[in-house]
Length: 362
Image (cartoon, rainbow, N blue to C red):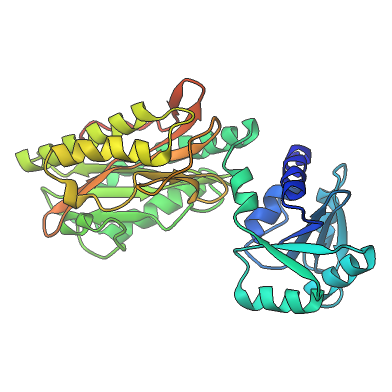
């Protein structure tokens, strides 16, 4: 994936912060700013240094050859760190005469302390700098996210045949993951949530060996990963005919979902969208049963900027990809969450999720 535009944006922000060089070590941020495909995993084995006139990736022998190949035709120089990664970086920057070195605030304290001691000069901390660039998706990123969501939709269609009394939550979760992987997912965006009956009242329930029972709410929250980008979707169904109380709860959540999507537009603060959806649930008498935020950004990670919760002060931008996922959770009874993935466009939200969200009674 081309990275020239990302480097230009990052360098502009470094100039504004009066920083000579920026050291990026978070694996996802390193992958993003380099644009290298098929090189990185979750290992903290890399250091990317960006300055006004250079872009250098330091890595070890396990990744050097693949990184070198990926760098062909890009502005990036790849350096093999034969000794300690951060000692090498600091020595090279000192020789170049850099005066201010900036680090990510996500760096563990021990690493921050070690690098600061090695550097010996002025060290700055820049909060979520790359993450804020990542939140506006490029066209190719949107293509990948849509492909991941389409695979997630196909998985939902597949798993409906598995939802019947006697099958365990664990069996369903395994089949979700097996199907996504068989169909081309690089993994799962997060461990799938399969929560039935009273377990569905826990927003982030752990999968158990509980057997599904007639009359259960069954809440499914999962997402595929395609070309390094995630999807995220939740659907809730009922085994058999829904009760009047189940219908009431489901309708409140669905109406909140629809209201939230309708409220999305460029320039609207995330908390304002949350407020619109939350007021629907409050008006139905379930306000104290919706405790989490309405949504979050999705991209290379399943939880990214921007936030669409009560404290989401940042305004939405064209190119943001966010979830809209209101829920109502009644302890001992069950819960409903309906989550769609949407992209913010000039005139509002475009829903990427294709799965039906009217109440399914299986």
